[in-house]
Image 1 (cartoon, rainbow, N blue to C red):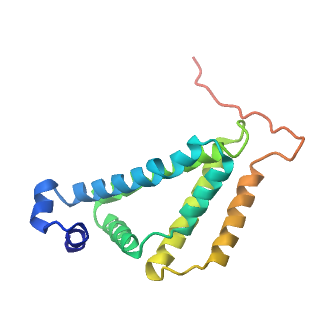
Image 2 (image 1 turned 135 degrees about the vertical axis):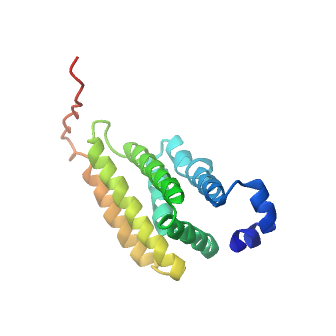
Image 3 (image 1 turned 120 degrees about the horizontal axis):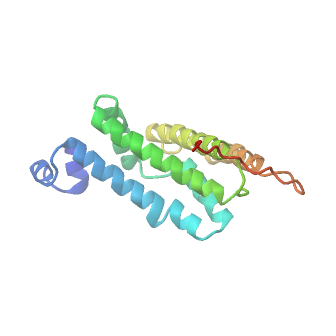
Length: 182
């Protein structure tokens, strides 16, 4: 609470008057950050362009986690709190699910329409997992991992994305969906 008060310039007492409890504060922080990160200038904006390179650039930015160290420390505190507080854990799980859905939707812009949704989800999960690892490393040292490692990670990610595409001249079979029996 002291860190939030210091960062916001608002007294701790005023924060508690504006929010019902700690979970409400965490929810507001997470929602604001996700909204900004995905919609305003992030993934949704890149996807709205229809430009595959804009989506790949957003993925690179997401993986590189080059935010301010103070932001990283606050997110790390929220993640730690999620291990102690079920409501905060639920908030962070919802955040991760939304992020994974957005990543999967962005990947759909990079691959054929008939790509297996499960494969898309697996690549989205891989990107999210790599980004989480880089994030935790950057909390400890904002310069680590360096650009060469980020380039290597992106080469792996781009290869995984490219593997979702059929070889040139070959059409990938349409994905069948199961429907419930009448």
